Image 1 (tube, rainbow, N blue to C red):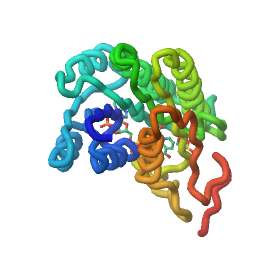
Image 2 (cartoon, rainbow, N blue to C red; image 1 turned 180 degrees about the vertical axis):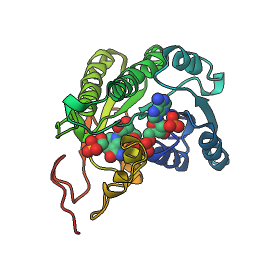
Image 3 (tube, protein in one colour; image 1 turned 135 degrees about the vertical axis):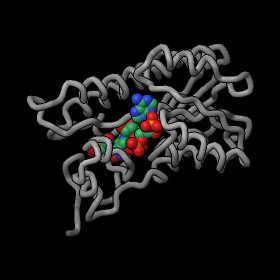
Image 4 (cartoon, rainbow, N blue to C red; image 1 turned 120 degrees about the vertical axis):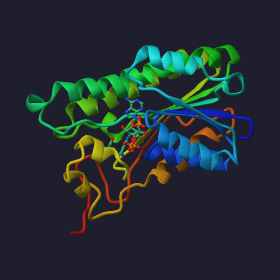
Length: 251
Ligand code: NDP
Ligand code: 8X3
């Protein structure tokens, strides 16, 4: 995997950050994206002894800023071999009739439109070089709707549909497209969903949830397969989880 470059969105936390460390261990050069520059700087400082690292600070909701940031990548990092479309979150957990419209906007704008903007900026050079691998981080919520999950689940169902569409449309150019769909992963996800409310602390109590490193391992497995193998779709749960609503908890 040496001499490869990966661009990872949402590299400042959780699954994205764990993937960053996993890729650096394997010698993959990195373009790390997020809004929290202090975290990007810390990660870059830690990893730059192992691999080349470049950071980009932009909000994926902002179409112009996203395209401008990606177009500003210096020549040495410009050929992105691997794109990890990971930036995203849930905002709120409410019955649809009580949902906050700003939360709906955030989830559709970040999880769906942000992923499209980033992909739009990266795909042309992959097409030109007739190579590349795009991994979209979906969710078990993209396969199964759960109570109060409504719009978050819709955003992740959209990610799955976009992934399948990308795989079809990019097939003539030899570009691999994969969806990695985890269930419950212990990250800052629930802090964001519940906007800092103490409810977030209970989400991962009473069982061992997936850790971000578990997902990073599967992402690396997917990107390190031989050229003729594409891991199209992965659904992964912690052992305690059987479906979106069935989680065996010890209290
Ligand atoms: P975290 O909250 O820990 O990380 C989210 C990342 O997304 C951060 O690095 C954040 O960076 C970035 N991000 C959020 N909003 C924006 C934005 N507007 N512009 C740019 N970057 C943004 O959550 P996870 O690691 O859990 O989530 C990563 C992905 O995994 C998401 O797509 C999520 O839906 C998915 N997922 C999570 C699961 C879980 O249970 N945790 C399960 C299944 C899927 P910054 O704030 O610095 O911009
Ligand atoms: C995140 C997992 O179950 O909270 O996608 O939707 S869940």
